[in-house]
Image 1 (spheres, rainbow, N blue to C red):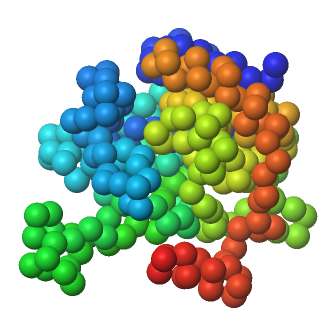
Image 2 (spheres, rainbow, N blue to C red):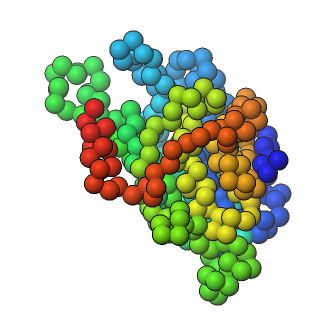
Length: 305
């Protein structure tokens, strides 16, 4: 197998891992850190309470739970910043020079996460914008919907930010590519550089049936960023918050070596079953992910649904 799933706390594993031994990190962490603590996961699995909001049914169909990041206190955001600073320092140590970090976030907490990673010594190289219409936001004032029918508490979410960071290196990019196989991004094709805006959809039901994780990302999106993470197609991709293994599945699809770390035993077992199945799924991927005229029209129509 080209992938390995390790049941462990990523902070412990990163401290023991050798320096300059990982070539890229692609991960979707618990954005607010709180939602995947043991007591919150227990409430999620019980279907009630905690930071997870169970949305009302629409047309008789039960919608999936959503984490409520707006309930995070100032102290919790500060603790999250401190965590990602320490995490960033450990990632900096295990990454080869020029190795990239692709890290998912959301518009409410990305500033705290990204600032902490920059302070830990990683170069911010931009953000990957995943254009996707979700069910977050856009709601009328709670318990006063009829009184304020034309008011939304916050914008309806139609995008997801992924921070892009790189471990600094000395010399030229070409020299670093020769020595460490890292420093740049693999082009989608000879004629298409990797873009910083990727059109995406919500995770298909068939993928959720294979891996029923509450934060599952679609393979059509994960394959594009995992492909870009190893510029020469060589090295090791690490996912320190592996969940159901979507990063590993994308890496396995391309024959990349990968390691997934997961602290929750149920999700780790889920990943062991899901990764080979997700890796084999036929997935339609846009040619370059950039909004052309037709895509922009389709995306606008989806937002207005």
